Image 1 (cartoon, rainbow, N blue to C red):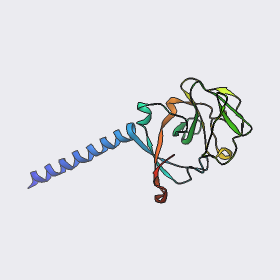
Image 2: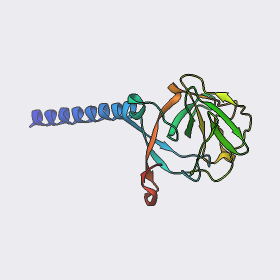
Image 3: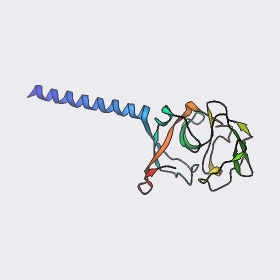
Image 4: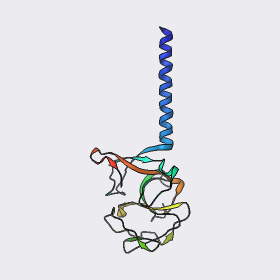
Length: 174
């Protein structure tokens, strides 16, 4: 009887350790959870929403324009959620409330207010860096700010792909 109990305990310990290892691998290499804080991505995302972020997307590919990404903000030591606007090598300009990429107006159906330059001056996105903006251009600390600037590829943690909360908005993110 005692031997059976010991085998059962060892079996449970193995199960728990295996579960922790699988969870660690999934969180480290496959996906993570992100919480929307603040108004910078409105109207697309709102405070309190919970997102699934695919880390795998950028292990096998590169960020694309209009991807919503989670990035590490080294200055404030927190994660930010922004939209990829400019890719490496592209010329970005903001004038008259519009974003220009290589001289062409970027059509942005997800914003509701004009884009102001703030501190940003026309620039070419450096290699391995990205230009990101929040959808709520009036309330976003993004690549227009010298405190954030262009985002290094290694600081982009993943692509927001699915909204878990609130339940009435559950589904993929555009």
